[in-house]
Image 1 (cartoon, rainbow, N blue to C red):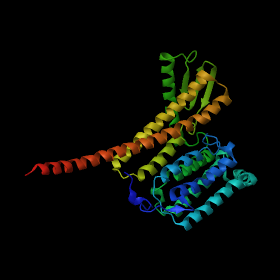
Image 2 (cartoon, rainbow, N blue to C red):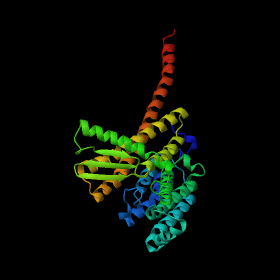
Image 3 (spheres, one colour):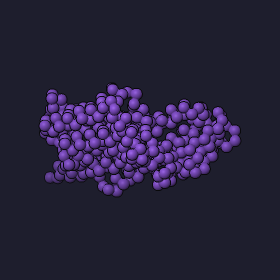
Image 4 (spheres, one colour):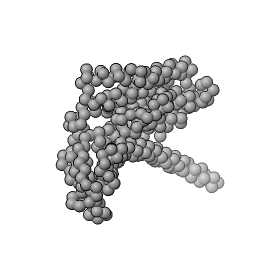
Length: 347
């Protein structure tokens, strides 16, 4: 199922580094800067995509998921180089509260940055993405992306999205903003069905979508949302596309099935984004119109839904392909057994 010829591994060796299994040693050094920042600055690990380092949790899952199943033979000198890269990256996080963060913020006007938060958090993801990519190039060579690329692509993709949000905020990117009105129209339609056939959500029309405006009228009064592309889940679609392409690149299956898996995942991610918007609408209609409470729910909803969906979908693809491979092996072996059995009956 996976093209083992593309892996930098040695199946016949039990390579150990400093007494540790090579796979475990590689995972530990790669996640070292993430673990350090989590211990040193736990309050910065908000799950909201542009309000902290919560996205590092994704990398913390992807790195061991891709590497622990390999049989690596890692040169000790290369591993020591990666340790040095890890120390440099940790030094970046140490330097942030000592003046580096202030320098990053003060440089924002020079680059005509519009959203400072996205700009400042962007550099954390740039640092981590650079570290993971350089480390894997050192460890695995030029074909590193065919071995373990999901975490690196996720981190780099997150940095890209934050840069877009920093330089082109709100609805200034028309191409990404174009999907928002369609999502809101679907939300209005679903909310209407719930109001008519399941439970009353308030008096009058519960949801009205006009362009990127969503007007809600629920049990707790009016609530008006102006939705821009990041809040509509466009960033999750970009991240899904990057991670899924990296994942499919490593799979030794026909191109047609790769395209089918990718397309099905696009549909699933779009549905997830719609469900998220509906959930946010219902939260305002049924629970509260208090802005801080709604913002807290908004900050958590997307990321909590997206990571499990992506993990379950990738695991489902792997499971399906393994079953398909087993079935094909059984079909190949079955005629051979039949021929052998029939040969035994011959005089």
